[in-house]
Length: 315
Image (tube, rainbow, N blue to C red):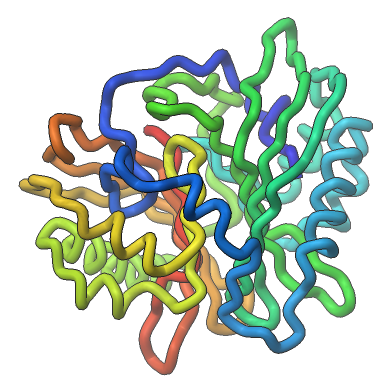
């Protein structure tokens, strides 16, 4: 779903020479072969049971885009799950606010294409689709960044797949620098965070950031699920666990890491989202590590929460 455009009014993307980080934990992926990872199989499968097809989720994405384009806020009242959350930096929009803003979006849309869809099946009830969106969109006189990588998390509700999370990352190398997004208004948080779950998942997130800091490949491999994928701060997509592990074990000199602004909720039994801000004092090569607004999709394997999908945007 192309939802952030017009909801958050992206301003023109500017670039910096800071670290071209991929996803949480922050890493230097400048030398990663992005084209190779993007050409891998389009569907990463953590569970094949009752998994949605790529075509089915792509159709839902297009349906949502057309509803946003038509300013059809009513559509989103049925399309989004009750604990839906939109991420744009520090801003987190809930279902009610999202539907209201879409009904009044100030944008005009010319031509657009949606392509290069990739699906990560987290569980039989949860899937993530990433899409390259190239569009001619103007919002209040400003041309929106294009192309972007759109990230949507879907949850099965009976026979339908409904939106549980959405964000978009402009495709840029190096990534858009901090402050390249306009504020959508007051910094609200929604839906309510599960504080106990957030505390548990932040500890898991600290675990993986510390493993990245100390270059502990065994811990990283144990944390990432077999069908995991990721979207980095430049909109680049990493399609396999092996490529994620490779990126996170590249040499970086990091003194300290800090996680804050956590927000968590369980979107399906054994599947949860953690949103947070991550920062590190250090460098990857000669580039400083950029702070990031991030989201991890966690899935529970036995008694252990593990990372199944990762996305980060410049902070």
